[in-house]
Image (cartoon, rainbow, N blue to C red; front, side, top):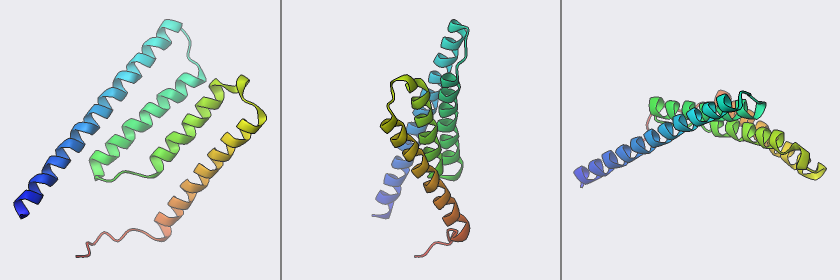
Length: 132
């Protein structure tokens, strides 16, 4: 039974690595498409820069996961904040006051979550020893 578990674990790790490779390649392709569009338009907007920042954060998240084997919780929260900011910038003319307040509230909640997670990691660090 031990060999079966070990084989299953190795298969899952392989599928994880393939999935991460697909995410990384897709992100690089998306970055290249965005850069080509900026060159075609001969203009770089703040929305373009924020989108590129989101792509870089996704690549950083994949890199951290490959290096440490752990998915950092804060990175997707950072990505969410940038995505909300980008949405607000792109659709500012069509946003009513209530929606702007809702979006800024969402950013505030995400920022507080990041602070809480960071505080928890510094005050209550993980025990790296395995309890069996």
